[in-house]
Image 1 (cartoon, helix red, strand yellow):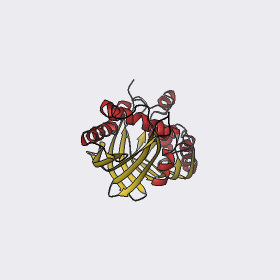
Image 2 (tube, rainbow, N blue to C red):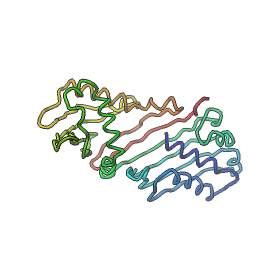
Image 3 (tube, rainbow, N blue to C red):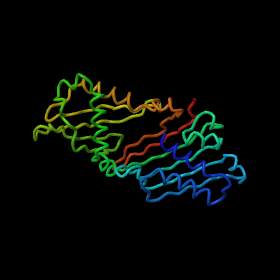
Image 4 (cartoon, one colour):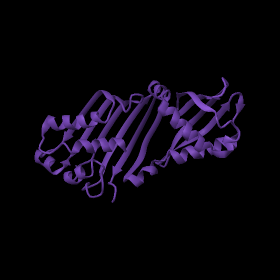
Amino acid sequence: MELITILLSGITTLFSLTGLVVDKNVEAAFLSQLDRAEQLQVRTDNAPVHQIINGKINKLRVAGRGLWVSKDLRIDTLEIETDPIAVNLQALQADGQSPRAGSIQQPIQAGIKLKFNEEDLNNYLKSPDAIARLQKMTTSTLGGAAAGSLNKDYQIANPQIRFLGNNRVGIQAELQDPNSSEKIAVNLETGVSVVGGRKFQLVAPKAMVGQTPVPEFLLSGLTAGISDRLNVDMFEQRGLSARILQFKVNPQQVELAAFVRLAGRKE
C-alpha cells in the first residue's frame, strides 16, 4: 500500500512537465518517501505528451536496488510496472495524496517484484521496531494456551532468520527474563506456501523451546494465527486488492511477485 501511495504522490507533480523531467519528478517523489536509495530509475510512457496535463500516463516503470524503507529495513530489489494511469489531479491534491474514489478515474493496476536478502532482514530484526512487532505478533498469535506455558514477562531477544531454500526458513530467537539473566533458546523451521494467492501458510513446522519440542497443538495454533495475519485481504478496506503471484525462498534471498489493484477509498 505504501508503495502505491508513493507512486501517487509523484503523479501530482506532473502538470505540464515532459520527457526526462517527468521521470525525475516521479523519482524525486519516491526518494522523498524513502530513507535513502542506492539505485533508482523511473521511466514514464506518456505519449502523447499533452495527456500528462490531464493526469494520464500510459505506463510507469520503477526499478530500484538497495532501497532503505527506514534506517533499518533495506529492500534489495524492487520493480514496479503499471497499466495506464488516469487520475483527477485536482481531486488527488485535495485528498493530500490519499486516494479516494473521486480522484481515481480508473483503477491503478501494477505488477510488483521484491527481493530481500537474508543479511538485510537480519539487520532489520535487530532493530527495536522489529523486536516490538515480533513481541506483539507472538503474544497475540499464540494466545492464552501458549502464554500459560511461558512466563508472560519473557521478552524476545536476538531474533534471526535463515533462508534454507525449497521455500523453507529457519527462525531462532531467545526468550529473556528481564528480571534475571535467564535465557531460553527458541528454534523454528518451517516451509512457507501461498494459498490461493491470498495468504501465507506455514508447512510442516517444527519448533523447540530450549531442549523441549513444542507440542503439535501449539504449532497448529501458531500456523493458523500467522496465516490469518499474513493475509492480503486486510488491505481491501483501504481500497487495495492484491494477489501473490510468486513466492520463492532461495538460500540467502527471498523473492516475491504480486499484482495489485487500487480502486481508491470511498468517502
